[in-house]
Image 1: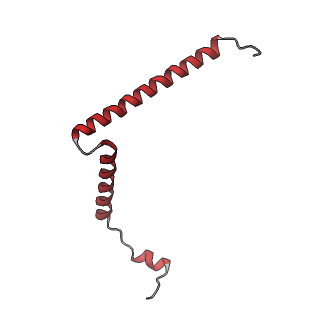
Image 2: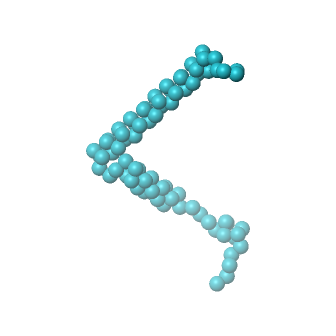
Image 3: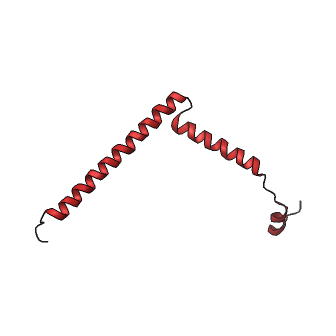
Amino acid sequence: MVKKGKAERRQNFKADMRAIKKEDVRKLQETYSRFFGAEPEEMKKNSSNIRKKVYVFGFALTIIFGALLYLTKNVKFVGF
């Protein structure tokens, strides 16, 4: 067995882009089905739950930010 140098291996390498793309698509579909579910009804339910959580979290952050802004502008803190 003869070891090839790094430069020699690089010259002989030809990427099979179709195979790489198919593998990436397969991995993406697998990840998506793990996260949202395999069945269409399950996907709808899980994506709806995630959307609700994002909206609630965003609303809560907006309220907290607004309250902090109000307090810093309108309330006199002792010692400041």
